[in-house]
Length: 190
Image 1 (cartoon, rainbow, N blue to C red):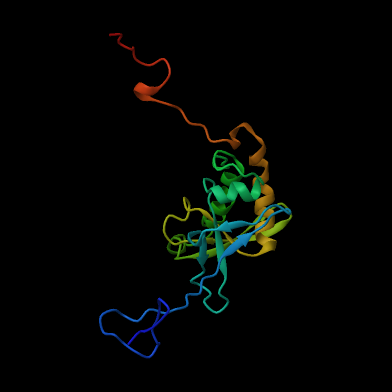
Image 2 (image 1 turned 30 degrees about the vertical axis):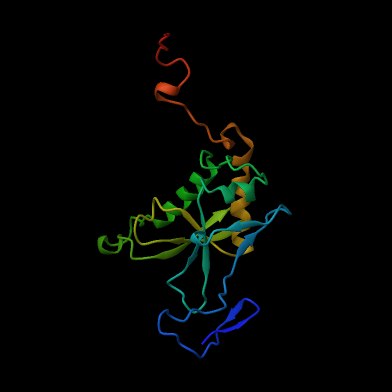
């Protein structure tokens, strides 16, 4: 039975009222924030952190690097604008191409072994560093880049992506189409 003291209702944890399931009074959540080159800390949504199912013991986690993600441009480009994007840049595409080349089977492998077998982790060279990339089993060639969540692996990737911050393509471009675009259609006068 709830006890009422000065307008505040308390329920003891041991009692069950039967009408509603007992809810936990405390919820624990972890928040991931990254900083790069002394910039502001940027919160990373939980959707962008991927657990590696291959190594449950080590609990290795990977960061999904998606060019259109606002947090990525705020982190790498050190800007506060929400419309900045590195999706139009070339560096992310180059990193994906390196990953895809590692996924391609070599010519001297037997035909049966040439198919990609489930999830795998490949290592690519970014600058002078070796970076671990997680590849899902389905659509690995078109999947987002998933980089090991470790400073030694994320640093070279972010440094490479910095080049896409300083160009004409750093700002998303929008084209108005249809009847609301400038110069389209005629306006009837009454």
